[in-house]
Image (cartoon, rainbow, N blue to C red; front, side):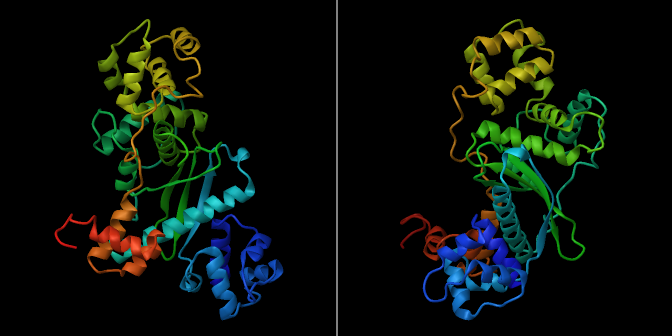
Length: 359
């Protein structure tokens, strides 16, 4: 138990055994070799060493005493080759730690939402057009209508997919995985997106990773290309796009394309690609725009979306404050779950001075 917790906390911090040893302070510092034995369960640290580890890793002592109630399955990094083994281990540990806390507060509130609302069984595709049809099918089963989706993160969390927005290596857009739980509970799907990327790219990543949950890997088409086609169709339905721009166009100006990207909240390059997929413009027209008006769009986003309140994973925080308001958990437990100082939790419960009467 303690060894697993120690290893998880170390990986989450991105530390090697030697790094952790160097970070420990005082007379209770131990060697990397001893730390390895603790992780393997070959030795048990004394109380002084445990306190030193708690300080070095930023976790309360009781964290190391709790059993791990989940494990990762089917971890799929996009552009895996560009991610180091240490980076992958750090991200995987952070994902497991976050989902454990997420499931803990759901259990406290006796919620059933740990099981995601799958829009049917994964579908085997035989052509790219099947990805288009699958996107329409998922929209229909989730009763989304044909309008643009205002918040992909909120949508997926409402359907039981845990979304985590964290710092990833620059080359990695995101990853998808399943988290297995103890007992007979079904695994929980998780999508992780790169906090350093803009809203446009994060939304496309979320739709792309959703595609990997609904496309059968036995499909005869290239799964990555099919996932991108699904993502474009899911965020920019063909029927809606045709109403906005017409059935057939020979050219587009800069301003119209920028307005379209803000309407669908995707990149300008994604809009242009989608116009070609829907047959609204020809491939030659698309290439011409990329070489002229849209030159450089694949690297530098024109008029990027700036919205500090958009595409944030809010549900976990809401549940923590709900549990706190209902006195299911203490302020100290809320601080532990949210990873915030105790005083900050108290201030957030009170609100700004004057917001609810006298303070």
